[in-house]
Length: 158
Image 1: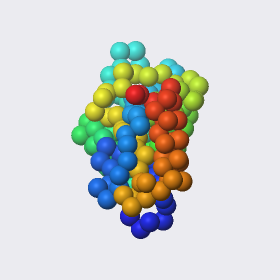
Image 2 (image 1 turned 90 degrees about the vertical axis):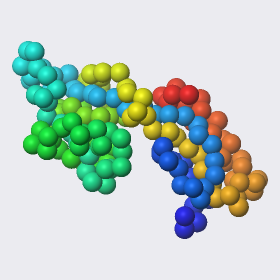
Image 3 (image 1 turned 30 degrees about the vertical axis):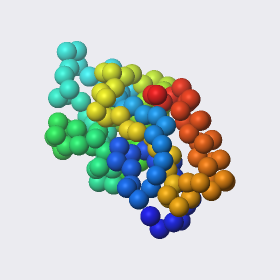
Image 4 (image 1 turned 90 degrees about the horizontal axis):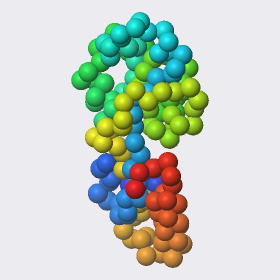
């Protein structure tokens, strides 16, 4: 909005109205735990037995953060973080279960997906620019390149 960049590549289900662009893909989020963490749980455990890796207020706008506020008591949250990468690392290190972006989980060994990714937690990936710049040749070349790369990335949903 302050014109500090010519092109934005953004994960958002509600891109800013003052920018124009194309949706290139969706990134999925699923519930994961480390295999080592799961071994610490009693046989027959339920979701109520989980320790959770949660979202810091900086990530409160995410659907997964809203889900946690609705379903996870504060006392079950072992750790909160303001970075999706750090959350994935914490889940991989066994701090508890958590909502992790699937590509981040896939890049870490020892994680188990506990349920299929719910569609309502998907995040759209957009390539955006200011309306005044969309026909500028260098901007068009970059946005076309980014769109092509993102729309064919096998880690994303198309």
